[in-house]
Length: 156
Image (cartoon, rainbow, N blue to C red; front, side, top):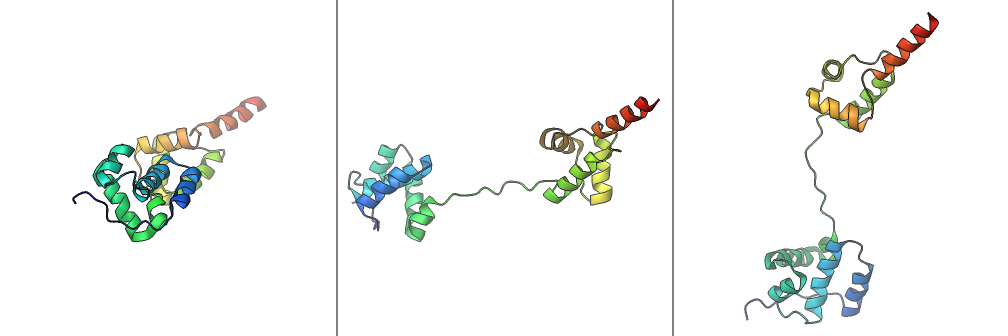
């Protein structure tokens, strides 16, 4: 019969119910619920289980393929998105943060761009540097210099 699930679920109904109660994320619960529905025969096919869970049949088939390959650990493992690499790596960010704390500071974000390229060999555009310094490091290129000016003007 087409659509009938041919998968051997190794965990018992009791174990699956326990795991459902312990699941922390929605995706874990959904995946365990599919196994539970198929194990208890409340869903006779993948299509029927997909209707109950509110997902596409193909999604459930992908989940079951993961379960066949590596069991529960593979099914419940989190997929980490690698994302795009940062233009300015962590080590360069730390060096910039140290440099921003020095009294001489920078005159502008453009000067920071030049410093990154000349001293650290990292080319970054103005917008990237501004976001890094202003929003992530919560700094300003001119803050350190202002402190220096105040001490000079207070002496006069």
